[in-house]
Image (cartoon, rainbow, N blue to C red):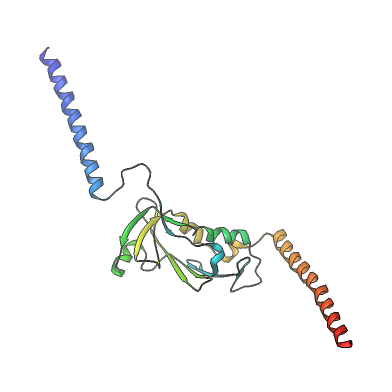
Length: 215
């Protein structure tokens, strides 16, 4: 073997060792920082709120305050009860909280730490009152470096990261939930039909009462 070939082989071996050393160092660094080196991260369920259990909901965001009441079947605006709400759209919004999932659990944080995550003065605050009187709070903060969103709930002092769709979905205002004209007319017709159906029953009851009095 010539000296030239030997040198080439030595150089190739040295480069290979250097590359392996760099990869090993990166893996160690990721483990030290608590990063998950797997391709897929398992989501954590932080909160699960059944829509049917909600009785009132309030959203505070950059547009102001939006408040809804719910009787288990129909949503209505607290500030404008006659506003024609798109029932499916409102239900879809709060279905996003069933479940509320996280990508990472950053652990418990003190109040002095919340500012770093935008949670000392949250960008969006979602307040829920359930049928059993329980009150829940979900606070949305800044965007994390990985594109996810920092958030926390009233269930604990833990901070999580979750999909940034939450901020997009809850940065809403009442006009975003206005029902189409046809849907509003259908709802009105259904209410009128129900009222007409009740009238004969009331008349029959009144006639029966009159007959009893006559006897």
